[in-house]
Amino acid sequence: MGGGNFGLALSTVLGRKGIPVTLLVRSTEVANTLNTEHTHPRYMSDINLPNSIRATTDPSAALADATYIIHAVPVQFSRAFLESVKEFIPPGTPILSASKGIETTSLGFMADILRDVLGEERGYAFLSGPSFAREICEGVATAVVIASSDLLLADDLASLMSDDNFRVFTSKDVIGVEIGGAVKNVIALAAGMCEGLGLGTNAMSGLVTRGCAEMRRLGSVFDAKPSTIAGLSGVGDTFGTCFGPLSRNRRFGYRLGEGETMSQILSSTTEVAEGVDTSIALVKMIKKKCKGYRLDLKYPILFGVAAILEGKQTPEDGLRGLMNMPMRMESFEELYG
Image 1 (cartoon, rainbow, N blue to C red):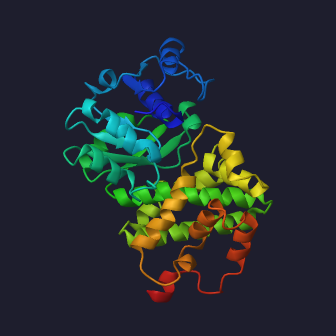
Image 2 (cartoon, one colour; image 1 turned 45 degrees about the vertical axis):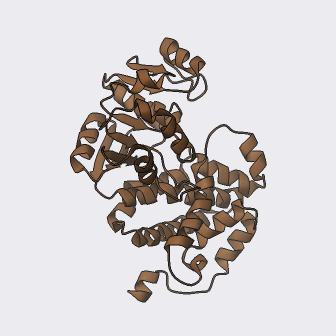
């Protein structure tokens, strides 16, 4: 479900193994092009897709006999999309979500959205990790993690998707994987702003490292495992998204750092930078879930990015605020145990 870049990439992983895949897309034109020319007319149009991939706009035809369903619709559109197709999803069919972020209305992760709409009576799994869609389609070596409370489901999906160039690890830490996948996009916005402002490697490295510390701190609030935050879905995905030239979130932040406005950037692209909406939702969620005084001192990068996106400060102001924070120990955990 979802014919964007990442939906195409995961379809390609399966298609290369000869596994029949049906893509559910919105446009008849896109479906026809995928079926006849084996390319997408807009996304990665220079890449030839495996012949075993078929596309349709009919949810009944796409979902009725599915063994597994992969959900690759952006988080902010997921609830409405799932509501529109849930009658066609067979009872008990497992869902693998590849969407990352926090819903702005409910402040929930994808696990919450899926259970709200599709219920508890099926297995859910969540894929994350440093995985640019184009590199996956090109067959570049990639490692990701699939998390599920049902480790047998995670193992089955890992076996289904793994090949010589696409390595899938497994985990039971769903919340840790989801936190990493959401927060890394916000850190990437900050990293892009840093680069757009013309700052150097020292600044970028320090910012990304401190951003990962905020990710770890938030993870501890939700009982995420530190090893998950330090793994592929946390630090690993953060490195890729912050330093990789294919990152939409980094590119969005870069343009902000260069002086473009939010409206200018949003009007010039059709690609979704999940970190933009997630950033605002993340701060609301922290204020709701986390106890303590001056949360902005515990999460200065996450709060700072949200303030920039809301027009409350400029990227220059945000950097100045970070550099003028009170001097203290590097780790809150070391100070308080």
